[in-house]
Length: 132
Image (tube, rainbow, N blue to C red; front, side):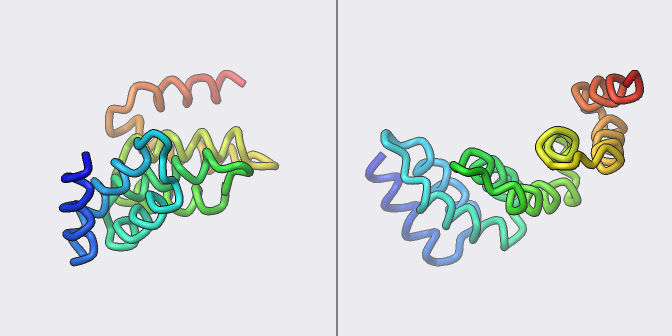
């Protein structure tokens, strides 16, 4: 792990986006995790357009105490707009369940996009939304 961290750090500092993402993953999974550093590297990779980093950054922001819902929404949206169907689905969950008031129309839009791309859980969420 130490070797991987060293090499990924060097590559990350040289602006290698995949290394930034991998370094953030490693930092997030350390025992104990280094969430501030993971957040920083996810942010750099996300800003460079890495959809996995955008999604994981949003996930990390949701887990903060208190959660950063606005930040999570921003990064889920970036990944969703890039075609990440899991981000589309989870963005729908955020819009329907975490926001006050909920944005059910926004959730419907993102779940529809994900469902049309074959995301099964998004299709199920749409069915539940239509039933209620």
